[in-house]
Image (cartoon, rainbow over all chains, first blue to last red):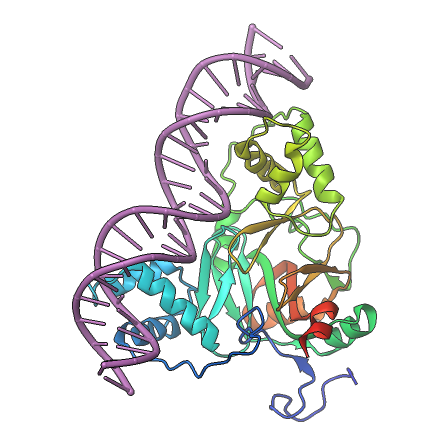
Length: 166
Length: 166
DNA sequence: ATTTCTGCAAAAATTTTGCACCTTG
DNA sequence: CAAGGTGCAAAATTTTTGCAGAAAT
């Protein structure tokens, strides 16, 4: 029933009328059979990497994060950054955001959300909105596709660039 | 004149009640001032590249296109492919689709549309649906952001992978 | 004739990987 | 100790660029 919004508050975990914004991808590929427990050590590098991702909303690149952590870990290596990002993505606490420039960006915002991308400066801003569940229903009916997550990128000029533009 | 027409070509036919799916990005970055007419030669390579993009729905990579055209142009170079893709994107007839793997994909579907991405096989399928215009209004009210385009990626398992899965 | 485009090759930029040693549990 | 992680460096990928000659208008 993709109807209108009931009077009460609509955001609860029970039966959402809105389609969940992409929170965490199922690691991609399939895991055939051998599903070993896969123990994981706690390391300062990974911990700080996550903190850094959580404390910003700029959707940093691996290079950004590497630079940002070099002060703390002078011998940090890029490989470590990439490997840890991969771990965090697999764990579902960090999301990859493929960007228009081709460089991958990373998003530590744990809430389901979407993005506004400025056409001029390229900045990405988080949007705390939800897409109507009706869309998933339509997908199901029209295409027999069952979508469990969605990510929407809105494009336009951000306030700053709109002012500066003309 | 004050007709709010952002840089780039945002051709809007009338007044849609649905938000336009990202048709063509305004080339990114800023367009300063010197906007020379920029003459453009017609070349077979570029023509065939576009045809190839229009004749498929697989959202090929530059490498895919390069390989696909080598039969026809044995001395084709990757540089030519990339440069022509850039031209087509700037002209607004081809769209860049940043993919999860990091490699850029290209989309020659001229209709506004969205995508369904299979979590298992990674295939991207075009969706002929539209997002409600109400979303843009909400963005405007909640964030003071004026979005003129939107691109939504829906995630889940495609039919084939759903069957094969379990 | 002049501007644009191509092929080729070298260079950049980004991400992945092998390996020896160090850490965590 | 054993499994997992790090730093380092080399390699693999993907994309960009400088140039000289070729093509288009």
